[in-house]
Image (spheres, rainbow, N blue to C red):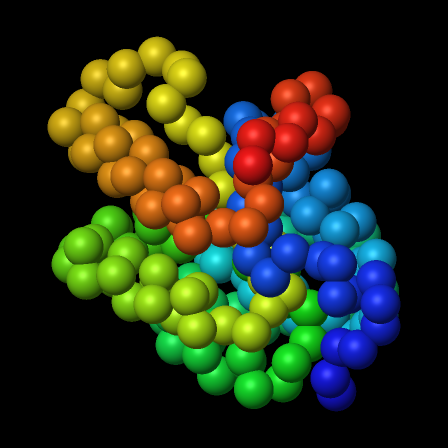
Length: 179
């Protein structure tokens, strides 16, 4: 299906939605994507490794109806974006933070993984809406792994924001347009 409405012609090809925990990032991103004609693709990067994460995933799934096609991509996000781009449907990726964490814990080469992600995003026809946490405003993590993750997430957010057509920061459920 090709997106051809006048509304989608105005829709940015690549949007990045940033914010802290429970800031309303995912809900806002879903609203943006669902303003376009369905069907919509929801690319999920979370893995249900414990009870709490299973509940979070279920909460997100319950917000979406049958017009959403869910695709799981906990580590193969760049390849998934490339594969789904041919479908020419609005795509939401939730979230870069979990994807990066999954890559880090799997001991993947983060520079290579991030490079592949940026390339896939640059090639994606859009519209693509990405969700990511802004992790640099909190306390300094007390472990080397935590500090590495915080730094890598900040670098990834910068790279994606640089190529994004729109960047929105969510604060207390309110969208603040940054770019």
